[in-house]
Length: 135
Image (cartoon, rainbow, N blue to C red; front, side):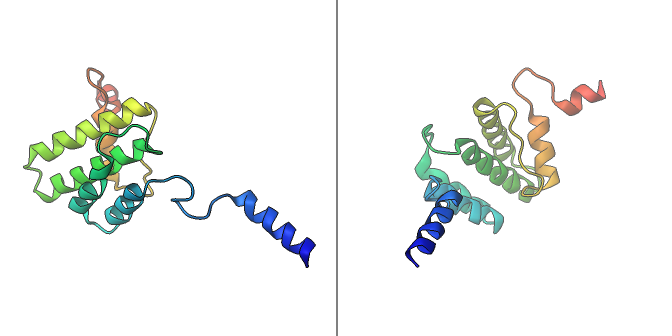
């Protein structure tokens, strides 16, 4: 029994930590993700407030991604008239791209419309992929 227990413990260790927090994901990011997928976009922004502009947070690109996606969703909900929300979303997308230039949101997790917005936002001074293709 002792030998079997040792083998089971070794197997469990191979899988690594079981929870996101055990893997180093900040509690605020975990909460924000849950809120985002529940459609609570304003609460996502509040949940991410404790992280501020911290650069030492694991998965920092995802902090900005969830901010961008939430701001964009609120912009769409506004009837696409609140340009401050749109501009704030673009700022967060630029931060994502500064941290990890090749990063793309997963189309499995985010709407096609947001993914296109993310891709079309480009970087300052650079044409977006769609703009370049149209030219």
